[in-house]
Image 1 (spheres, rainbow, N blue to C red):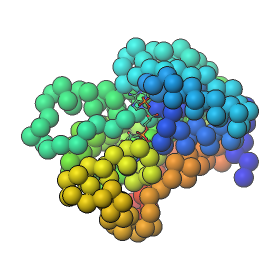
Image 2: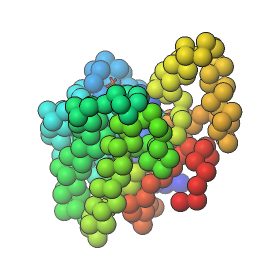
Image 3: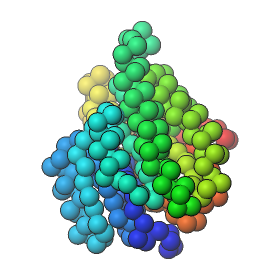
Length: 259
Ligand code: NAP
């Protein structure tokens, strides 16, 4: 399917690896020029070069921390005039409700709620002026089925979800859509580190920890970054112009819900 976005330009945050990288790859395959970001400059430049070589699109890299104001400003400067924004960052650490103080919450809100909001606020006016834009925020399955030990993530992502629900309706008349893409367990470094944690805690091999988790997913496997990226690229395509303020869940059937 021709996604109809060849020649457009996108900022994809936190994209040297994992789900962000999957989104960058799929957009590049559709002919979209990229601004890519991560903190580690070396892995970021290597990922960018692979994408340039494979898809022949222009890729600019900005090595910075998207959760800081200074990082956001660097990204906004490099991404002036983009048509597509994909927001992403690492997730907050797990724990117990008794573990977290105000500073922990502020950090989580900065990373997973206020950073995407700052980027939307800076980059959507240009999209509105040009009458076309797409925003996809990478959030989590925990928005629909909160995970008890991820209280910081549950809180911050719920805040972003509420913001998107209202704001998406305000920008839709101008041809700009905002939607959220909710990953369940995907085969990235993050999933591997979660398996490593279970392996240590339960005294089983990493392979057994993964097999246990796969058995709990109706699709009986982890999702791939390529599948995730393809869905993101579709949500950024011409065909998705009528999708507004949605929370699109990719979890292999884990969440047993109808909405
Ligand atoms: P990942 O494989 O660990 O990749 C994270 C990517 O983001 C890397 O390129 C990393 O590069 C970059 N990054 C991390 N923190 C950053 C920051 N502060 N500023 C700029 N770049 C940053 O992670 P992932 O699995 O793709 O997860 C992406 C998001 O989806 C996370 O918020 C995670 O909580 C959420 N999620 C993932 C899953 C899953 O199963 N994978 C499930 C639910 C939710 P640098 O380290 O060099 O910065």
